[in-house]
Structure formats: structure tokens, C-alpha cells
Length: 155
Image (cartoon, rainbow, N blue to C red; front, side):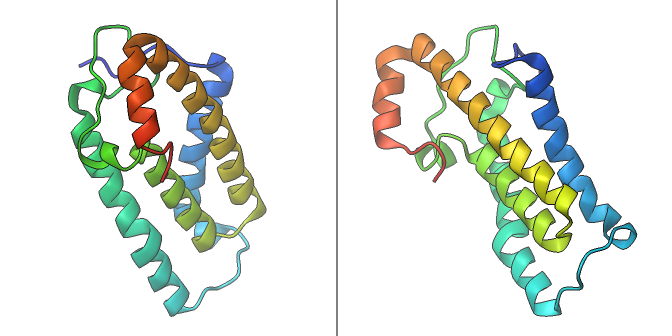
């Protein structure tokens, strides 16, 4: 399986967006080294139950449902439009899950740099998604239009 495809936007911006998400998640491990307010056990538990656990479940299930179509970027070979499973409810469940996990990271480590990284990553990924949608429209035409009329971009 080929993991990397063609970038849908400027490659520097594309990979910066991906790196911003990774850096956002690294903050979870840096909590003891950055100045961040202490959270109550109830806030941490709520963060875990509302964002982390569902985010991880959605991420794993979405990856499995994409199967061989999973790419970082646009596929350069033939592929099919995935409209089953979680893709019946969101056109981008993987992005929804990484947004959830990024928000959980910012709640756990509410540092200005962590929050900035998440905002940058979300904005860049919105542009990535818009470019991916143009690609999908050109590739799947009427099937894509019908799908977008039935399923929202995020949730």
C-alpha cells in the first residue's frame, strides 16, 4: 500500500499543517515542562471521556474503513469513494478525530503555543479538505455531488 500521495495544496503548507498536529500532540508529553494551569481530576476525566476516547475510536475505525484508500495526500492510482461506516455521517471522520484529539491536548496543556499550533493545523487542514473535495468532484462527479448532498463535511 502506498501511504503518500500528491499534496493537495502547496507542499510546504501541507506538511507544516501535518507537523503542527504532531507538535500539538507532543505537548501532552511536555506538560511537566511547560507552564500550564493545574486541572481538576474532574476536568481531566471529562476531557478523557468526551474527547480522547471517542477521538481515538473514531480515528481507528475511520482508518480501518478507508482500508487501501488511506493516503497522506491525494491518491495517484485508481480508488473508490468511501461512503460506508463512519463516512455515512461525516465526509472527514479522520479529520474530526484529530481535531478532537488536538482540542483535548489544548485542554490538558493550555499553553499559548499549543493552542496556536492547533488553530494553524485546523485552518491549514480546512484548505487541504477543500482542495481534496475539488479532486473528488473531478474524479467521482455525480457520485460525489450526491454524497455531499447527503453527508456533511465534518459533523
